[in-house]
Image 1 (tube, rainbow, N blue to C red):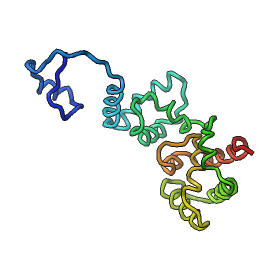
Image 2: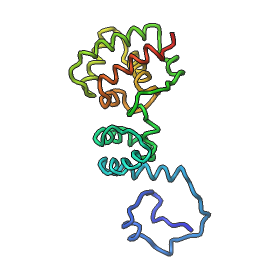
Image 3: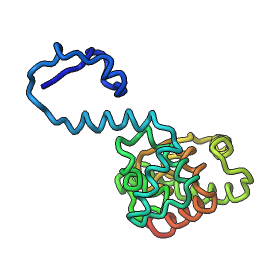
Image 4: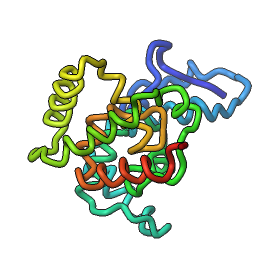
Length: 202
């Protein structure tokens, strides 16, 4: 059986459903379990929840699987950054493991596409340049990187793509500088150095 009050809305509170329900509008229909629709609805509720509530909800699950989420404050920041990109809160540690641990696998196709002849030297210079960067925030890393790459007469993409793959192992995700801002600067440097010495094809 099926019923809905209007055709222009998908999400209702329980109070709204009770108020709007009309038995005369209940129709016979083929019951369909649509997992994609369920995931979409779950994502809508997830995005509407306060970050603190989501954090408190996720912590017991992470502890039950012995997942090191560092701290509640850090976990809250990760949830805030990625909650628009996930449909289920429990998928967070699997979808962005690099926010909690250094990546162990890397998108090889992305490396081949974006690693040019000059890229290695560029990344090495960038590592040295950010060592002396006193403030490590979204704005400071963003503004510094733009100024630094423009002084070299190059485009932002020349450094952004190599940084993303080296730091996260992935070809996509949240904004790079938002991601870097959550990670400790020393952690970022160590990831870049590890990639250059260990992962990058010689």
